[in-house]
Length: 308
Image 1 (cartoon, rainbow, N blue to C red):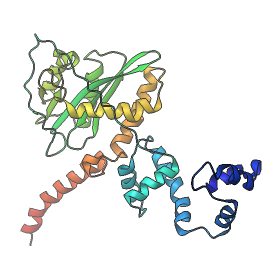
Image 2 (tube, rainbow, N blue to C red):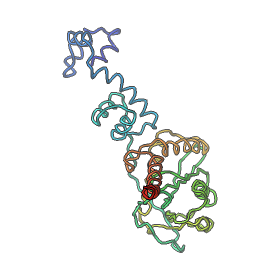
Image 3 (tube, rainbow, N blue to C red):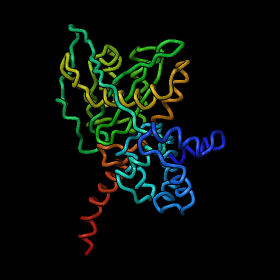
Image 4 (spheres, rainbow, N blue to C red):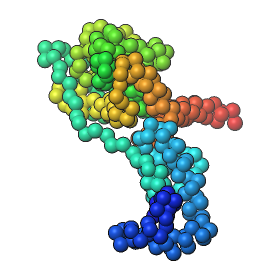
């Protein structure tokens, strides 16, 4: 109310604003109350709010404007601010920001009933004991003014890191998902021995050229059960977040190239900056770094014990 009067007092005057709005708005301040409020020294809470509200707005904007209370609280703590979760929610209201809600739509893939499908080696257990053990893959699409842009992601189940991706104007196996897989394989050094590659029954993933490439890299192919919307749930969750956090926030999209550039920036943010609740509010890069640090420590411990 004080802010409203400050914004309009030069045009209407304090007395007139209070006289008109006092009977209409329950609890509206009187002109005397306004003068008393503006003449007293600002409270410690008010001064702290003046400091933190712009910081909340800045951090929220830097993270695609998608964080809700839980992640904003974790981010503020990571930035060194001693704030509680309820305080974070109040600061977000003052800053005029809020989190985005994911779509509840479920997409299923129709497969070719005549095709021979790999066995389901995952059985909805989307967990792994380390990086490069289980990858999940899926394709989504983005409507642009120039036609559809198709997007393929390869995600590491352990760290939630997007290890491979591609944007193209076609769904052809050798162009869209193949290039995403090759990016992920290059990042892993070209040897995927011991890794399970899990996908749905889309024709691009079941194409011989693609399945042969999986085997050539040393990975084992896996697909879920037919007609099951949860058979590739983690990969679909990545697509859902991508649509929620980037595509719907930044559209409309003009060209496939514009989507590709935006996806490049989004994937970097997803891997290096986005806090993941499934990772105890860490980033995928931090989760992998912690895994390899623990692994190195475990390998060095026996040697250190022998030297005693």
